[in-house]
Image (cartoon, rainbow, N blue to C red; front, top):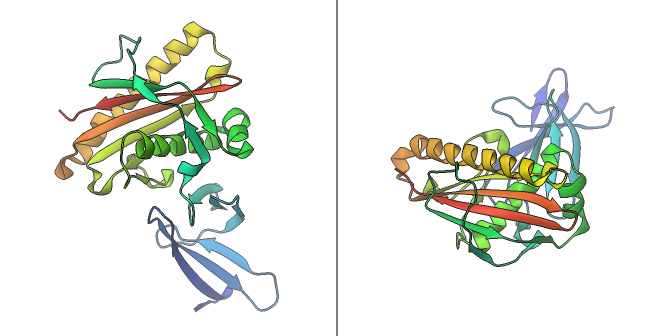
Length: 238
């Protein structure tokens, strides 16, 4: 507990989610008005505007820019998706280089309507969240990385990683591909994959002291009104 001259009495409640993301929620009350909330961001506690829980994600909207922090207090997101087999894929984009193996998953299903609607009709932040969760599910279910951590985007660095950053993962999802002609889609996917491979090489350099053993670019995209696909590239450190 503490006391602020402006906000009145407050109580700090600290919590960790399944990925060990630790934050503190500050609850203010002046004895008269409805209580207010702040969420830790460094040494500050920006104002919280909105808190929601959809059964898997705890989402908190906070700060002057209304940034979003998402936590997984009870359930990991792998239960939200179903994956077809991951098979070797002869990547048709010749200008994408710097990877050792390529794979594809021809269909990603969702177990709830909510994630389907977020992918097809959500804002960019919703789509990015689905992309990260699909990448986590692929890493856990297809790459055998049972200890993978999904990073909070506000923290920067790799989107996903294993402890000690031995394996680093870049994740993206494209919603716009459902409307693109084939040629335009191929150019889009090629450009995104090149960027992701470049990011992985930057990650290798940044985490050099941890001696990473591998990296993965996991790009998910909407192919049509009924199909979500994923391309996986394995990238080895130099």
